[in-house]
Every structure is written in C-alpha cells, then in structure tokens.
Length: 113
Length: 115
Image (cartoon, rainbow over all chains, first blue to last red; front, top):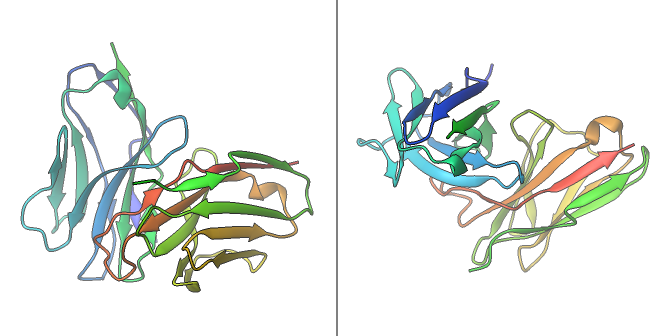
C-alpha cells in the first residue's frame, strides 16, 4: 500500500495568491514525522517544513504552513502569497520508526504572473 | 556550515558497466542515506548508513551497494548497470539516526544515464 498519496499531479496559482497541496498518509506507527520538500528543476531537494505526530499545533515556517489533521491522516501544505520562485515540484514525505523517508509522487506547482 | 555535496553532477555509462557516486555529509551529520529518483517520480529509498554500517535497505538488488567512511562521507556503487538504473541519485544526511523528527538534508544529486 502507498504510504504517501498526493492526488494533484499539477496545479496553477496566480502570483500573490495562496495554494494548498494535498497529502494523505498511511501508517500504523504511533510516532512518525511528516515533511514537505521542494524540488526545483535544478534537482536539489529543499526541506520546507516538518510536523510531528504528537505535535498539537500546526507547523508554520514563513509562508509555509502545514494543515495537520491526524484523524484523517492528512498533512496538506499551504503556500501563502505565492511567488514566481515557488514554481517547482513539491513532495510530501513521512518518516516512521525505520527512519527512512517515504515520498509521494509529487505535485508540480506553476505560479503565473 | 557546508551542506551535502555530491559528485559527479552528471554521468553517462554503458549497460553492464559499474559506477561509483560520492557524497559528503553536512557537517555534524552522522547518518547518510541514498535515494533513486526516476524521471517524474518521487525518490525511492535505497539504503541508509549510520556510523559506517548499513542499517536499513529498500527494495533494491544487491548490485546496489554502499560505504560510509569515518568522516561520514559515503559512496554508492552500482554494478552491472541496466537501462532502468538511469535516474537522479540523491544523497541525504541527517544529524541523528534515532530521531525521526530530524529532517534529511539533500545534495543536488547525480544524474546517471545508462545507454
């Protein structure tokens, strides 16, 4: 079974608007971490934000926030005030007790001027 | 602090050959892992090294092997290359293997093309 599901292959967003990227996960581990990474066309995987399974509050990092709904097993990424430089592939990933990262298929975001 | 560096950036090999990819971990990081990313897909876990020992492996055949050195740098070796091995190979380091909260920091990757 897929551990991480990202159902949006591609999204378009207007500059300065917000965009939500969906992510659902599947695990039976009580302790896990959820991560979002950005991958520009250059290939580097850039860490954006982290949410722990026991964290009570949603994580925020600048323009990035994570909408964590544990009961629904979802961890959506919200990018506010989109910029042209936000155009990239975005990956949701989960780290369980075996410490490896399991990635979703990714969502391509294109920001329009 | 220096980040994760990988070499080479690009590589072209012929089917059946062997290849070695190299990775220098971020300063202070004792855990390194390797991922294979085929075009248009998410990265797939190959294996992880902690203090010079492999301590986790994904669904990859034994012709994928690795090493971690005392300075925590690492190598990924692939023998008997196949066309399907063409991919971006990403190295990642983290500060603490036992902390699932610690994010992995990735290098820019090595793009391998097998012809």
